[in-house]
Image 1 (cartoon, helix red, strand yellow):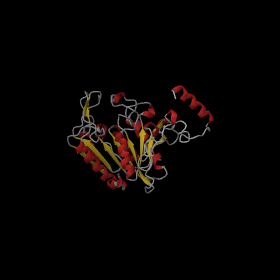
Image 2 (tube, one colour; image 1 turned 90 degrees about the vertical axis):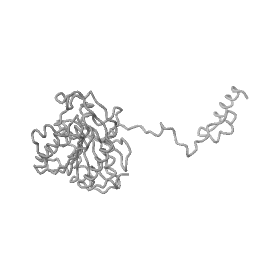
Image 3 (spheres, rainbow, N blue to C red; image 1 turned 135 degrees about the horizontal axis):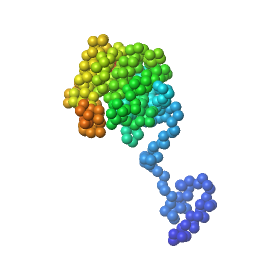
Image 4 (cartoon, rainbow, N blue to C red; image 1 turned 90 degrees about the horizontal axis):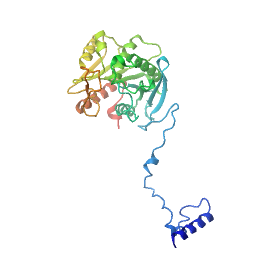
Amino acid sequence: MNLLHRAAALHSLLRAAPRRASCAGLAAVLAVLAGCAAPRDAATPPDAGAMTAPVPAATTATPVRPTVGQPWQAVVIDGPQGVRLRAHFLPPPIDARTPAPAVLALHGCGGLYTASGALSSRYTEAAHRLQAAGAAVLLVDSFGSRQVERVCQTRYAERRIEVADRVGDAQAALAWLGARPGVDAQRLALMGWSNGGTTVLHVLAALRNRPSGVPLPAAAAVWYPGCVPLARERTAVAAVPLLMQLGALDDWTPPAPCEAWARQAQQQNTPIEWHVHADSYHGFDGTAPVRFRSDVPNGVNGRGVHQGGHAPARAVSQRLLDAFWARTLGLSLAEGVR
């Protein structure tokens, strides 16, 4: 039978067949046309594109990425001066003891996202470790909420978003977390990197006066913050246990001012501990190789800075952090992370 005859036969058979006839039921009559496709073997995975569901439009809680027990939720928080703060909330695992501790994490000058728009792995890694140990985590997008992507390449004096703005964001976020069902308002914590770490220290300074409606965190952890104004003004902070980790070679936010300020804070009875990691630059807790960034004008010499991970310091930093959360929040990350 030639191709034309086969086509005519197929047309006649399909017109006569019931609309819901199965591929298997027509297999015999269509065999002349090489049959219909054989059913997919149950062990054969579907096409990769079919495995990715479209992201629904953001409402009050939009899953961003599945993780241990529960997924990320996109939330909006009323911030200072009418700013609507976009944020990502990672609830504690379904089987966690509640109320659970919660950690507010503040991003650095590069913002919360990668160039592709995904949450930066630095923040999601920290969040997933905490969630696996039974805590909730909140990431607040201070920059994107104000239509700014990043500020690293902008001189301090020319930045549209100042640390004071982010302090207001953090206070609003702490109040939001403290009122969240299933969250233990007595076991809130702050953590921040670089510009976010600087913000955490200034939040602790603001909380000395106990602003109404803002719960006092039980702990705070920061990496390579900027401490020059704090040391110069001998700024006092709330008596909150604080862990500060610094890079010995940091030429962006050098460790010396932070060490000087930490000694001052100790004299003011602040429960602070700090660690200076040898052979480490800004971002030592990451995994990217060290590189020189000539696009950053805010370093020690104003002509660029070094940034990148240092594996030994990263490992020690994580151990110090795990022990700190165990002491202050009652979390056991060594057992909880999987």
